[in-house]
Image 1 (cartoon, rainbow, N blue to C red):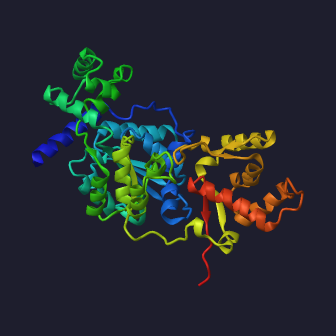
Image 2 (cartoon, rainbow, N blue to C red):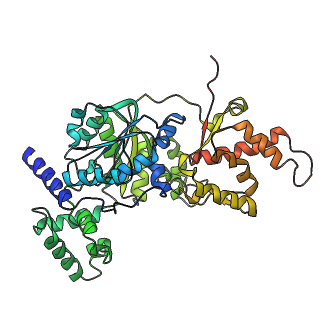
Image 3 (cartoon, one colour):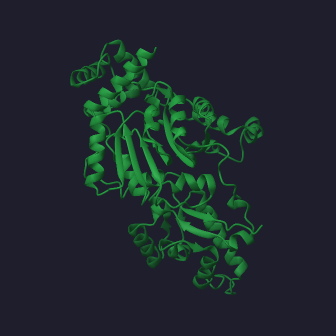
Amino acid sequence: MNNQKSDIVEKIRQQFNSAPYPRIPLEQSPKDNYQLLYIHNLITPYYLRNQTVIETEGKIILDAGCGTGYKSLTLAEANPGAKIVGIDLSEESVNLARHRLEYHGIENAEFHVLSIEDLPELGLEYDYINSDEVLYLLPDIKAGLKTLKSVLKDRGIIRANFHSSLQRFAYFWAQELFKMMGLMDENPRELEMELAREIMTALKDDVLLKRLTWKPDAAQSEEWMLMNYLFQGDKGYTIPEMFSALQAADLELVSMVNWRQWDLLHLFKEQDNLPAFLAMSLPEISTEEGLHLCELLHPVNRLIDFWCAHPDRAQPFVPVAEWTLYDWQDARVHLHPQLKTPQARADLIQCITSQQPFEISRYVTLPVLVPIFLESNMAACLLPLWEGACPAKSLVERWLKLKPLHPVTLEPVSEEAAWEEVKEVLSRLEVFLYLLLERSPRPS
C-alpha cells in the first residue's frame, strides 16, 4: 500500500513538472480581480470568525501547493505587508512561482520544493494557510490537515478544499476509463491526450459520458485535458467526509468560502412556505447536516471549499443583529479592502453625481445571489469609508446633512430615525462582508 501511495505521489510530481499548473502568463496580475483578492484576503475569514478587522502587516502566509505561483501572487496582493511562503512538490513549478513574484516586485516571499508532510522542517508557524486544489491529491486528507494544523498559529486560519465527488462524478468516471485503457500508466503526454480526444470525439453525442463531460473547445487545451480526463491522483469527497477529516485533525469549520451558495433555504421557491416536514426539521439540523442536504439537492460546486481553524479559539462576539443602540454608537465601520479601489470610488462618485443607484456587488459577487444596490443619497453617506474606517455615529451625522427633511412631511428627520436608516443599510451590507463592523469592548 505504501508503495502504491508513493507511486501515485511520484506520478503527480511528474505531471506537474512536465505540465506546471496553472498556466497563467507571467505578466498577468490579479490586482483588478477583486473577487479573487476578497477570497485570499486574511481579513475575510478572520472577520467571519472573530468579527474583528485584522492587520495583514507582518503576518506569515503559507501557500501549500503553490504551483506556478499565481495564488501566491494573489495572497501577496491581497495581504499587504505579509510574508509569503510557498511550497510545492514540483521543482519546475516552484521555479516559475519564484520568478513570477520577482517579476511583480514582491520581495517578501520564499519558495521551497517540499511536500506538505515535510512542512515542519521549515520551522515556521503561519497566520494563514492557503491549500487550494491540493488536499484531494494527497493519499490521506486527514493526515494532510493534521500537518497543516501543526504549523498553524493559535488564532490562525486554513483555507482548503476538496473536489466534490457528487458534482465531479462524471470526470472520475472518465479517469477510470482512461486508466483501464492504459493512458494513465505513466505521466500522460501529448500522445495520451490525443488518444483521449480521439476516443471522446468518436463517441456518439448521446453517449452519457460524452454528454456529461465533453467540451470540444476546452479539450483543445492541454491543461484542460490533464486536469480533467488524465488527472493523476484526482479524488472526490462529500460534506460528511470533510467533517470527518476536520474532526480527525482536531479542526473546526469557520465557514464555506462561497457560503451563500451553500444556503439551503435558497433552494426553495418560497422560503417562508416550506413543506411541513422540512419547516419543522430544518431549524433543528446541524451545520453538517444542512450542508450535506444542500450538496445532495444541488451539487453545483466543483470544490468543497472551506475555512477552518483551531477549535474554541475564536474571539467571542455579539452578532450585529443583536446589537443595542449603545453598541452602535461606539461601533466602527470599515469598507472591505477589496472594495477600497480607485475604480470603485470613481464609480461611486459618478452614481452620486448622476443620482443613480450604486451597484456595490458588481466588484465582488461571491457572497450575493442577486445584485445589491445603494440609492445615491446613501452611497454619498458611505463615501468617507473609501478614505478609511469611520465611527458609525459620524455616518449618521452625515446622513442627517444629506437628508435633513422627511420627503413627504418636510419635517426635520430625527436623530433616532437617522440611526434606524443607517443601521439598516450597514447591517445589510455587513451580511455580505462589504462592510465590516467592529463593536467597541464594553467596560467590565
